[in-house]
Image 1 (tube, one colour):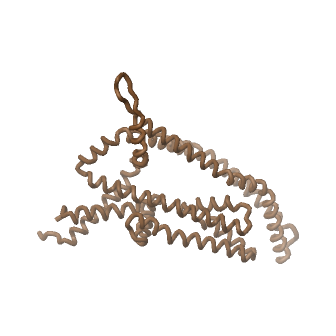
Image 2 (cartoon, rainbow, N blue to C red):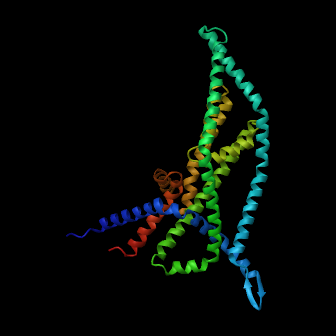
Image 3 (cartoon, helix red, strand yellow):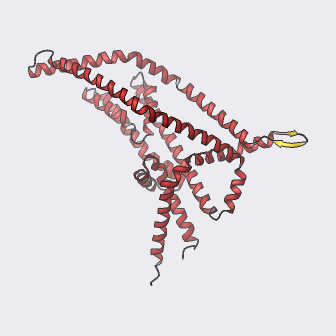
Length: 358
């Protein structure tokens, strides 16, 4: 039997590693997600925990004791969550103020919309020779039926989805409890875990995968945060300059939508711009359309570059891996795609260049 050539061996190696990485992401990763987040948090907290652990020393029955790392880490985590909550609450004051203004102006908006629709229907009646009020009455009846149908559907949806919502809420609560407890246990057993990993037969693979996931996760979070801030700032500034009274509220909302792949800035800006253009408000419509184009251009240019610069991938490799990851794993694929590509590349280099595959 002819032995496989060097190229065929490498193809088999790449295919095998790619299949193993895909299987790990598809079947193993969902089971350990809370612990991965907990491990990352524990690594981030460890320097301060170790410092405080050395500082807080007391004597008990003639013995020198240290405050357990789990207690210090748990206290830090609670304080951090409290600070973030306070900052979010303080930052949302302007949002709530504009939401209150929007709620106060909503009846006026409905009156304006009713006047516009009535005028359009009146013009259609006159243009087609219909009896005065026919189309308006038809529209009123249709709106009434739509309201009743929507009310019944909403009530039915609430009744049908209440159990599902409670289940998801319970799952979320369980996730955070597991995450919190795991952080404390990992902090307490960090040295032992590192020693076990160093003695493991697969310690190189564990170190490589952990390093890559940390690198890509940090790069992705940094990219989304930077892009969200840029988009929100740009939208807020443009809307403020155009005299929009809800510039801050809309700017923050559009920035948050931009971080969601299925929504994005186009969810708001595209229909808004089209409505303005249809109403022949050319300048305002052009501003909104131009704002959407600017937001899309910024994301398409900056996202691959920001992530690629911190991961060692070119913008094209980052973009392709994000697309493939999305097709394979859904929304999480935007993060898993680059992680998987880097892990495959590193493992192939580890086994091939080190001469472990002959």
